[in-house]
Image 1: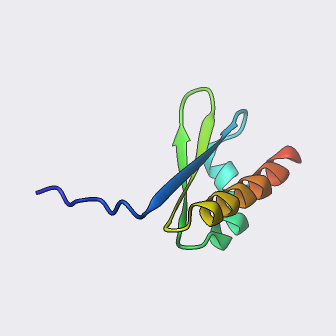
Image 2: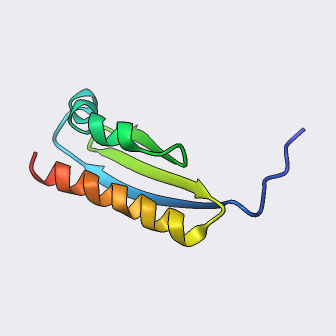
Length: 84
C-alpha cells in the first residue's frame, strides 16, 4: 500500500555541479557545512563520471522559509567550493 503524501508539505531543491575533485575529498571539504544542516534539509551526493551533483532538498510546511534556508546553505557551499 502506498501512503498518501501530505499535501501541506513543500519540497524545494537546489543543485550544485562540482567537477575536478573526488567525492570523498569533496565530502571532507564540506563536512562542517553538512553537519550544520537542520533536519529539514538533506544533502545528496550524486556522482557521475564527469562531475558530482550536490542536491540540497528541503521539506517544510512553510514554503518561503524552506526556500530561503536551502538557498542559504547553497550559498555557504558555493562560497566554500569557490576557494578550492
